Structures are given as structure tokens and as C-alpha cells.
Image (cartoon, rainbow, N blue to C red):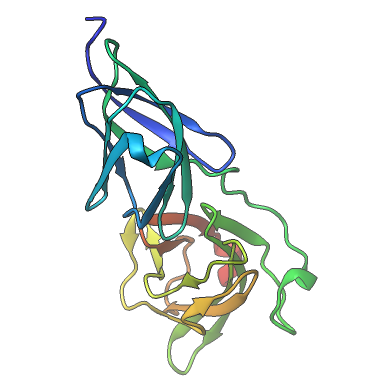
Length: 232
């Protein structure tokens, strides 16, 4: 049992290197929720590395400890590879991204909105370290029978990276069920560092009960609740 292989889940961010236990003559798999694009390994002559979809297969060729960095479209994962000859090791490791801080809701001053003349409702939340979302205001168009919810989305990625909004979705739900006849539009297709874009969600005017706004980008998501008081 001391040599038994293991399957485990680790949560990684750019604040701490995660140790991975390898064994000579065995291959270990790191399975990511996003597809790895590139790896940088300290002593590459001592490791065989292969990409298979979202998996990264690693096989040690020598008893040498080194560091490994895995780059995905939105994150950089850091690991310390430790090798032994007769020990327990990692067979399969599910790698998840750990956000530096959980999504928060805070009161937002109207001055914090980039939209001139708009008063912020005061609902603010994040999607991992990708996107910050500010719910700006609600308004109505009785002639078309629609209610509008204006939002501001801001990139949280580093200066060197551009955030694509092609996979962005904004969905209103109640009890986990999407509201009928809704839609959304976004002003920009991509966001550079610290750049913002306006977005608008529209739902039928007859919806006067509170609901949740779900914002999804890629495989990440977050949400906030719009209370009835904002729909009057």
C-alpha cells in the first residue's frame, strides 16, 4: 500500500507552486479544465512531456527535481516535479484554478461607472481573474414591452494578454431556469488590459419579480441577484 498510486485534485494559482509526485518508469497525467497551449520545464532533458487534448502527460527520465509552468489561454499554472524510484506517486491529477479572492458584492459609487450620466445600482462581482462585472442600471421601453439591464464588463487579465468576449454569455434566470424571450448585446469583441465594454441584457417588461444575472465566459461563470426593488 505504501507504493499505491493516487488520483487527486489540486487547486493552483500564481501565488504558490504545487508539488507533483512522479515515479521512474511511470507516466503521470495532469488534467486541466482549459486546454494547455505551452509548457516551460526547468530540466527538459530529464522529462518526456506530451499534450493530449486537456491532458499533459509527464514521464521522468531521470531522478531530477525541477519546476514546470503550464500556459493556458487565461492562466499560468506552476508546479514542482519531484521524482523517486520506490514511492507513492500521482497517477492522475485534476488541476483546477484557485481564484486569489472569491467573488464579492460591494457598494459602488456612481463615479466608478464609466458610463456618463448613469447611476450604478451597486452590484459588482468577478469571474475568477478574467472579468469584473458592474450592474449599472435598469430601464424600460413600454412601447416594445422590454426591460433593459445595462452592465459594464472589465478585463482583469495582465497587460500582455487580450480577453476575447466571443464566448461571453449573459443569461437571466429564476430558480435556475432561463427567462423566456431574453437576449443580450455586447459593445466590443475583445478587451485589452484594464479596458471596459458596455453590455445590455433585455427581458420582457412583464417580468417584475427578482431574478439572477449569470455571466459566463468560456468554462467560468458567476452571478448576482437583481432584487425586485430595482425593477420598479
